[in-house]
Length: 261
Image (cartoon, rainbow, N blue to C red):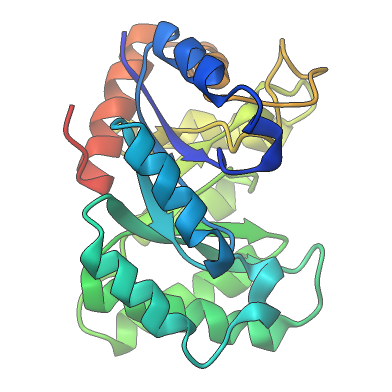
C-alpha cells in the first residue's frame, strides 16, 4: 500500500535531531511521496536542502497568512525565481486567510491575491490555509475565476469546515485534504465533510509536526508515518477499505501536483 503525505513541515527544529530515523519510519509505513509546504521565504533554502536530501520529497513556496506582514516588494520575484529554477517545486503555498488568530484581514487578502497571481502565471496548484475565513476565501477565488481567464486549481489543506463550506470549494474545483483532525472524536463537521467529498478530490496529510492523529494524539510531534491513521479514519467514515483510500488519494496527489511514482 502506497501513501502520499501532501503537507509536511520537516524543516522545523523538532525534526533536526532524528530526521533520518523519521524518514525510515515513513518509508516503513508506505509513504512514497511527500509535499513540503512553506510558511515564509526565510525557509526557502532549508526546504530546498531537505528536498535534495530525500528524492521522494517535493515542495511548495509561499507565505502563510499569519506571516502576511513579512511580504516585501521583492517577495513575489523570489517565489517566482525559485519556482521556475527548481524542478522540485510543485505548488505555491501555503497561502490563504486566517481570521482566527489575526485581524489584519486586508493585508492577508492582498498577499493571498498576489500569490494566486503567481500560481496562475506559472500554472502551478495552490495550497490554501483557511481558518474562520471560508466565506472570504470563497469570494476571492470566485472573483478570481470570474475576472481572470482560466481556473485556479489546488487544495484546501488541513480542512476543518462544515459540509456546506466543503461543497463550496468542491464546486470551485478544489481538492480537500484531511489531516489528523479527522480522527478526533468531537470533530463532527470534519467527519461529515469527509463523507461527502468525491473520491477524485480527496487527499490526506499530516501537517506535521502539528495535529498528531489518534492514537498518537498525546505525542508532542506528528510525523509523516502517521498519515496512515488519517487514511484509516477516512476509510471508516466513508465505508471503504484503507487500500482504496490509499490508492485513490495517491492517484489524486500525483494528478494535482504532477508527481511520479
